[in-house]
Length: 317
Image (cartoon, rainbow, N blue to C red; front, side, top):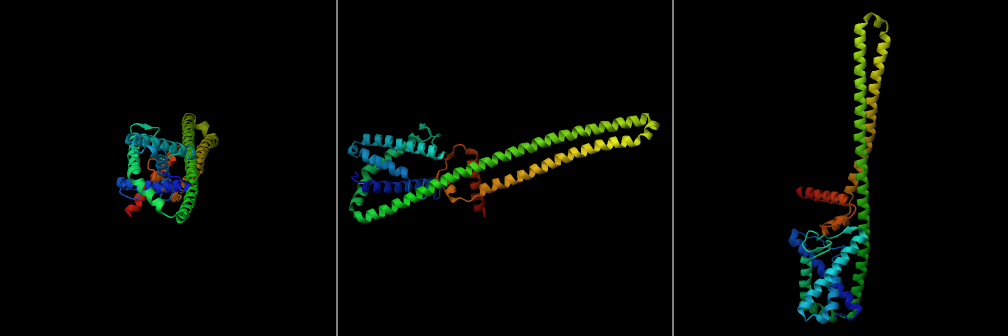
């Protein structure tokens, strides 16, 4: 049972690190490769440190009652996991893990399967692991222990600032991709509408031109001698219709060329936004494979697919 802030801080740091090790080991068994499975860049998972610390502080007086210890561990760790997931989503507009496909889940933040695993782990920690860790902690001289703890806390604080900055930039990045995607859609629709309207106009002009030719041809056949004298006006009339048709076609071509150029520029910016190098974003997406970006899901999924395609290309090379 920790009796000072020094001990509380050390217990938090130790179990945050051990929790990170557990997550990395679990990911390695699941995927066959190393994945930094932490919210922060460093080798710590704060939710594990908080969870185990709360269990130790609250349940140590009841540790000899196995049932209370087990049930209490499930309840306490589930509450902490739920609150952590809820706050992270509200603060950063991202759901970092999602248990919605697991049976007996609550809002996707907690589920029965992992709550039971938390309970088993905490019983093991309380009965086997923590007594040894606490004994070692008491045996370490306080001065060097304090110095190391201060250094670790400074590193932790810096890491937290960098991670928060990365997440905020990540959300801005997704917003930018969303906006570019929306603009591309608008311009594409405008191109489609312009082509439709232009082609319709050209067809109408073509019909007018065809009808004029047929009328003049009929008139010419029926009134050959009379129309010979007015040949110039007939020619002028046909030329006017032809000019109108050419002008309509030119307008369609001009409108298409302008919009095409705008579309190409937007597509180039969109591709540039996808290719924007940010190792922090990639690490977060790898660390939380079930992560969902609320409000930017389409852009997030497109960015995720893009990173996966690039990884596949690199492997093939």
